[in-house]
Image (cartoon, rainbow, N blue to C red):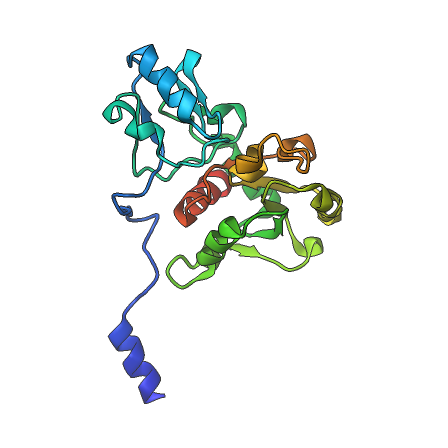
Length: 247
């Protein structure tokens, strides 16, 4: 017992104070893009041409964060004349259309806080569904259960059974082999329920966009309430979106 107390004193408090205090991520982290709307169209076209995800809509000078993998190639064109990436990890949106970004994103719906609080109180139980992903999104979601983030202190937990869940948190490009399992999981969750599309794979297909072996767009199967972009989404991007939308 004395050894445990000694270790506790030596280690101190490991859990982050976020969201009460801001967190500054490492400078190499790529978050919400900063887009220069006055950039020469030839530079914008160059960025669009090298984008492996066809995520840049040159005519509108926008980036589709639902497709973007944040590879950073566009940032290297003309010294970042068109786009640079900030350290802003708050990128969750309530609609797919809002992910077509001009450098800013709309605030998550204010009414959602009262709406979901009325439905679920102070507790939110989610069933994680990996629908054919590479495990990166799942790994960064698991990080939220570590002492540093301690997701459960907010009343949010991942559960084993859809019967015990308030909604599903879906990652991966939704392969054909996982489609029926995903639908069965969704149907097993009692109503009312919420659906979260996490990562560019579940939102648009990600690197597998256009493949005949995937569904690629979760909203084509079930209605989606919250979109969390990224490849994979940073744990703070997921945490920020959950807290802003549900809490």
